[in-house]
Amino acid sequence: MGKKKSSLKSTIAVSLTNYLDAGAIVAGASGLTLWQNYLGLTEGHLGWLNAISANCLGAAIGAIMGGFLADKYGRKAIYTYNMLVYMTGVALIMLSVNFPMLLAGFLITGISVGVGVPASWTYISENSEVGNRGRNIGISQMAWGIGPTIILILGTLLAPPTSGAESAGVLFAPVVESLAGMLTGGTAEGTALNVFSSRIVFASLFIVAFIAWLLQRRLDESEEWKAEKAKQGDKQQGGVFSSFGSLFTNKVNIRTILFLAGIYLTWNLVSSVMGFFQQHIYETAGGLSNQHANMLSVAQWVIIIVTTFVFSMIVDKVNQRWLYFFGVGMGVLAWVIIVTIGVNSIAGLLFFTLIWGIQAGVSVQSFYALWASELFPAKYRAAAQGVMFFIVRGVSALWGLGFVYIYGPNGEGFTIAAYIMMGLLLISLVIGTIWTPQTRGKTLEQITKERYGDNI
Image (cartoon, rainbow, N blue to C red):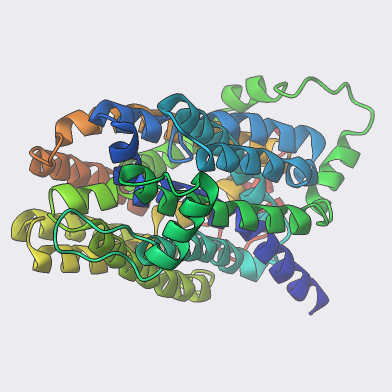
């Protein structure tokens, strides 16, 4: 019982990394149009913000560094320092007055997110009981839903008035206008005033990151990592990236990487676009105001939280193949509906919001986080996940740059983009359903023994 409480407590502390990961993506997305208007950004600028953010390349760079660092120096080393980097990036975004500052803030924040992801999924898996690995990963994914929900609620309450008849959020006048007036001496107006709502949203992430840093730096080191280091004994230890060669020369590793890339990369190409551009799509192709786009996204994230909770309660008890099929199948259905009914139809947007929310609760990311931490040995478990995360978010960065041109300034290419999304999700559906790993109910040591024997 004591161990169960311990694993749940540490899971919650580590899960703040997911809160801040998704929170940074959605904070950027919810204020994207505001920054665009304030700084006069083009669609190309928006593509670069997405490409180097926590959504894509920034996280990719951080992940490949963080994975190897976590295997070399321990999971706790990441939790001791990484949140300080995150706070630096968020502070830079809060203070941005030009595009280079904003771009640098997005990049630093993204790198910090990437550094923390492989360590967090690895730590949760290594610290979980056999029958609770899926549950704990699910709980960490709930934080991935709670973060955007809170951020979008803040964005809705702080939303500035639109050029049409839409009124401002209820907190815009008492909070945004008052704070902007106090900091600028009353000179902020127009787009400069409106963007203060996004600055405040990022300030909330700064506060949560500080709390996360206080909690995570007190965590105990992973017992499995310590056992692996003890087993290696006085053997010659290479540099931080010394395990890179063995990672890509072992046939089991290569097959595992291809499988995980097949399910996660294809899904993430869709999810990364929706994570960063969803509000922008709702406002341009869908014709919604910034406030209504945020409200619809809040509803979706509530659905995600509820569905993720259900996922966490059943993933260790049911056939994971069919649970995976259900989740990705709902994603395909969501895009079929939005193309059939139309993105500029409120009915289409409502159905899409509901069904996409369900699939995100039973998401490929949840299965990826679970399987990636199970399928690699402790020797380079975090490093392998870092490499995978680098590949996935790096390719997503390139896709984000291309997506803005397919989509167009006002969503002219939305239908073409939607069909591409459907195709990517179908690939993920087929690969994951056919080659679902049989790891449920087994210890990490047992899984490693079955897959690698003594060849690690």
